[in-house]
Length: 268
Image (cartoon, rainbow, N blue to C red; front, top):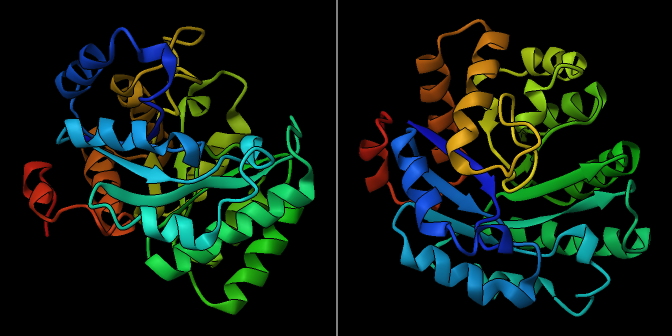
C-alpha cells in the first residue's frame, strides 16, 4: 500500500466530499494520509479531522505564505501542539520567493522556529521550497550545525544542488504529481539519483494533480499515478516502490503507531 505523505484535507476544496475522497484513497491502495498544516490558527480543524479518521494523521505549522500572518507563533507553541498523538510532523515551513507573500526575513525567522521545534520534538520538519534554493541551503547547513533535525523536502521541484545537499544532511525527498508532467524530465533525472530509501510520494492535494488527471482537483487516491512514474524512473516495479516508500514513511514519521506497520504490509 501507499502513503500520501502530504495533502491538505482541511481545505475547502474537499468540504463537500471529504468522506468520499478518503474512501476512494483506501480503495486505490492509499492506506494512510498525512494532512499538513498551513496555519497554526486553523490547527483545531486539522486535529479534529485527524482524530475522526484512523488513517489520517497531521502536522502543525505555518506555511511561508502565511508567515506574516502568524509572527507570534513560537517554537514553544509548536512543541506544545505537537504533543497530540495524531501530530506526526512540524510544518510546513520554509521559503517561497516565487510568490513572496511574506517578507523574506519573516519567512526565514518562521522557518528557523520550525526547525527548532523539529529538533526539540524529533518530529520531521516538512519543508516548502520554491525559487529559494541558495538561501534554503544556507539555513539548512547553519541550523544543522546547531544540532541535527529530521526533515523532508516536500513536493520537490528545485534544482539538483538542493537535492544533493538535502541527501547529504539526511533529509527525505518527496515527489508529487509534477513528476508526471511532460516537461518535467529534469525533475525525473533528479528523482533517479535519489536513493530508494530516501524517497516519499505525495499529492499536495488539492493541487498538482498528476497525469492523467492534470488540471483537475487532486486527491490522495491519485498518489498511485505519481508512484507509477517514480517506479519507472527508478527502474523498479510498482510493488517495490510502494513497499519502499511506505517503509520510508514509518522511518521518517517515527511517531506513527507501530501497529499500523503490519496493516500497511511493512516489515517492522
